Image (tube, rainbow, N blue to C red):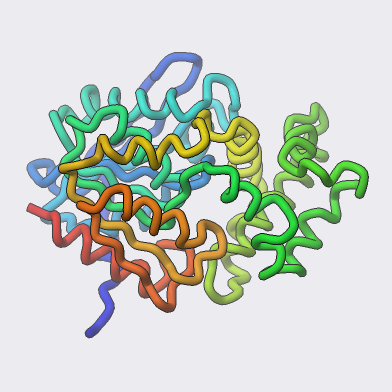
Length: 317
């Protein structure tokens, strides 16, 4: 069976900035068919920002697609800001976008990686506003997931070369808590120290997200403006455990009962390994779990993308 790929490029039919308070303004765009099925796309990171290809995961003739940059990233302002930037701020931002920009009662929610976390937080807070969920690369913010990424013995065992680059910046005496140690550098008053730490932090993530090594991915992740936003915001969220209690999103899965969904998970995802997707599927049996045997983390991996496009086609009007 031929694998599905992105829909052709499209341009937004409306764009704008939404003032959500706390000095934050969110860049948003509406694409596709204004009379189509409403869907909100939640990008990853935190801090990753949206790209033109994100809107291409939906049939533009059948979907009305809202894509936005979350607080502090992409074209939202202020750039890389950590003030008033938490999961629960973002959940309420999504509600304001639904009512003030999209003007719909309910919509489909689509998110990958951190976007899957935010999708779950939103859907568990506002289940009556969600028609379906399409999720990729599940991350639940449980301690084992943080340890996998930022302690020896997890992803470090798969990418020992990348791990050595990640910790090389940090004196040996400060390596017990890399999240906290990087936080000090990423919030330094010295822009050069911030950027050096941001590139190292963001590069480490870039090492883990593709099935095969990708110099283009590393280049994208270490571009200075993107690296600063991804590293500062991601580290901020990791440091605060996403403002979740341990196991909160799994316990909250009971609120998803009755909401249909698809979980697309790469078997060889080294950023968000399949354990979390499997646990979520067991807690939320309405969801179809698609394990991609030759997939890593990114949505652009051929098998992962095929699963996502088939899911959005399945729920299209």
